[in-house]
Length: 420
Image (cartoon, rainbow, N blue to C red):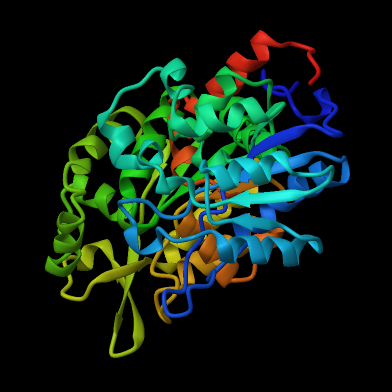
């Protein structure tokens, strides 16, 4: 058992039907219909392979897109093809989820076979608009069509979708009410890595928070400062610029309009309070950068406001942040320091990321933009842990519960030491 959750080590799966909930929600090339990135598929491979080689009859459930991302709400057929390639063994695909054909195919599975059913978000109870407006108990989720149809055909449920652990749907929470349940290898690894940072970090612990999703940064910042997890928070991106606005600096019309347009103005007041309470722990830019006529220009705070859009932290700030990174025993990263994809705005992110991989401290990076930027600079493989989760990671680090973690813990309490 890990973190109160049963694992695959607690079960004998040979000849048993296992429902495996993975998260392979991926960017889609809308011109070709194929996957634009297969990172989450690759991360799921170890658990899928382990189940197949152990002789389980594995039924995989997954989502792709949502009502909020309708362009990506597509079939999982490309995912099945790619999984087959990565595994080097067939992954059968059903263009069905709970219809008679799908149920018949599940019942016909042989030991070691793999089956991926189609996108669970084709079912109304799985989409965010339903979940956001219809409040159901876990027991009620267990009565959803997906669970009612598939649970009687299975012996074990394995939750492997840590990236969706903040969601509350039948495929993620309902099965745990009816079946013995375990966390998959990736799920347990991600929970352990984040728990190490949140609950037992080596000190000094440094949080590097940037990017454009400042709501995520401020959600985590308040919790890790209050509970003493973070010794220092290094702010960049829009988060660092909001900190400057909180101290009365004028940044310039272009930058301030961008912040307002993203609905981030309310965080200025929150920044004032955080700086008042934890000012010695929060670092913010002391110089910035913009790009003018294709060339990087660095700007001291005394030179503000400026007309161009501010797109990076400056050299003085970079050096100050690197000094703390090199001393850190734990480093948590969420959000690039600037617009890393553009020449002249990439220096902050590139130098900080390279300093992190060269530092002795244990590093964890998570969030879509963060991981993408680490891949862009070819350092992702050098981080100690790369988390697939975005929203789930933010919620966990903000001190809030994760419905899927709670569901797996309830299942473990019902069957401690049990076998399928």
